[in-house]
Image (cartoon, rainbow, N blue to C red):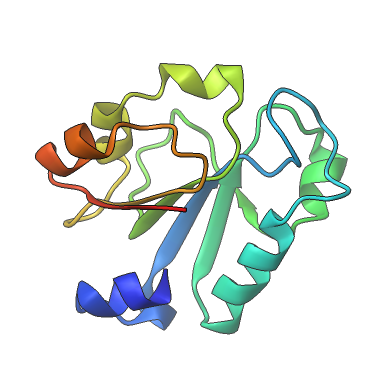
Length: 130
């Protein structure tokens, strides 16, 4: 992700990130084995400002991640969007909607291979997946 910032001529400590999904797997509220905690730590090590949304978590569970809570109705813009957990409630988030959350060059890191990479690139995303 940091390499992606560099490729886009962005300085990580001036960037923000939106993580969609914090739980271990989709449609549950279990965070015990969530690898997203490591991802957040790595981003914060580079001084990236981290926001997240997870409709499955209570406020108490969310607070364990030490990130800013993002409301999907907000008009906040992000340097990178990380799609981490494919909750059913996220299925309404089209690539066009995600692009509305993106700053100048939309950058999508799709951990779950949820989105069509061809369509994402056609819409102008820098698209990466695992």
